[in-house]
Image (cartoon, rainbow, N blue to C red; front, side):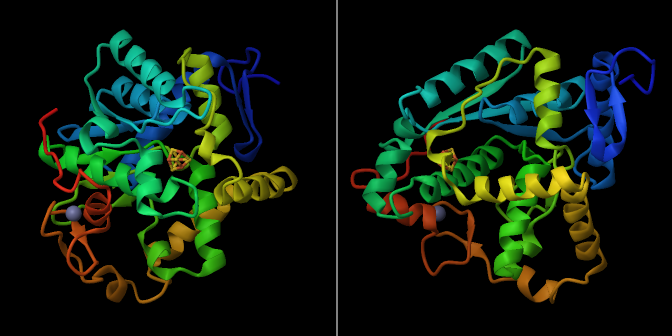
Length: 317
Ligand code: SF4
Ligand code: ZN
């Protein structure tokens, strides 16, 4: 297999794009494509201050790397979840994130959930009795809350996450199986800003997971290979496996599934968009982030439950 651009030996072959590239041209192609998606979906401009949510995995570190290479003003946010799982998951991902930031001279904000809210994620989950023995519900809620808070308090225009096509297709598949119109309408490369919330964007949403792995490896980015130990056996991994089987037989089907959805959404073919979009959000009386709940938002209710941390510390970073 030869590189389409220079004829040298190809390092990456993308069957779904009928495109093979050598290392050098692949490392050019990925940022070029990212820039194209940023423009196409109007994610942000040169002047915007971007906060990139960094987990220490290949996608978020690669996203940070790409945005900086493209010349955007992108700072990182690492959230310490306090998850060990026998592999020092949190401390190792924190170490690799710091290392990347230092080596590239980038600004990284770190929020440690235990320091700030009194307990690590697994304990918060236990205390709140949410999520049937898995901390993922509490973890997701907490991460969203912290990202929104930091973006707002530190004046970022945009919050960028490293979700790739495999992530997005799996979520779309799950939402379609349930026909959850509210979630389907909110899924996309850009979630516009609302009062109290920064715009959210997913610049990698059209890259296959294996394309991001190839990017991180070829760029020599050191990332945490292990998934969070709580991800094992999750529904989203099961959906990813199903979609991968489909993809093996029919290359490109994952991308088509996602892109056709976005097109239908844009044409307004899906449901009564406007009714659902306006779903009565109001600011939480405690933290000010938008919520549809009566009274406190879910995060502040979680904090109320977690004894001793009822008053949310807003300590500066
Ligand atoms: Fe949080 Fe781990 Fe669950 Fe992901 S898999 S939501 S990081 S606990
Ligand atoms: Zn709140």
